[in-house]
Length: 289
Image 1: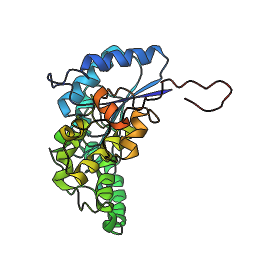
Image 2 (image 1 turned 135 degrees about the horizontal axis):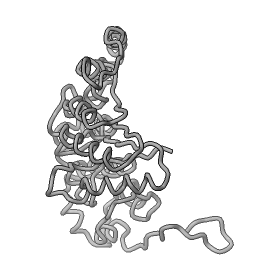
Image 3 (image 1 turned 120 degrees about the vertical axis):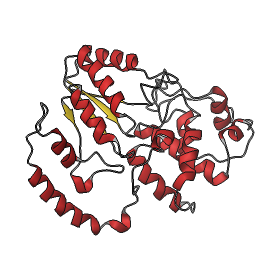
Image 4 (image 1 turned 135 degrees about the vertical axis):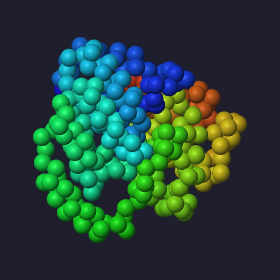
């Protein structure tokens, strides 16, 4: 059984104490007791900076006895260093991508990491020449798909502000274009933290990313701020997207670990009561209520 622990924020940032190093160690211990065979750190947004990666992996390595897997994205351009620091701390496995397919919202550069670890205690023994030949092939293949490549052209430290997951970054650009909002650019990256502010966590899980992303595009299209939404009463006529409106607050979709303001819930549902959770079956019916 493999356990995946989504990574939020920055464990080195004392001003964001909710997801601290202590939090992750406690979760890892609990998962080990439940019988997990493999613990995976899933850093979908690429937020795990090198020194944070070292501290996190070292603490987990000291406290749990199962293998540790590190998965990250390279949107900032820095996460090859995170993989190397995780290796220094004793990580058992780290994801990377062949050079021509790496970087941006993909994984860190495998070829470069292999070369960097050569002649060290963590030498991978992989053939760099073979990896480079493989990369040459995929570099050619990528040229045929350039018209469809909506990923960032270079790493950016803005990631640490908007915290958009790698998979969501490109999807958000395509959604914005389909809605006539043009290229998302810096505008959506500024709106993303504002949308995230509605909840107590950020947008790293796939379901939560969809909700926060749709709320971002909604606010952009309406030229609204979160404060404008919270000024509405229960008799408003604003049509929120189902993914970030009725489906979430009615609890058709369940976002674990998310705490939504009660006031926002009342506004979205216009006074309608949410479903109980866990759902209960109605007597004599197969439906949930």
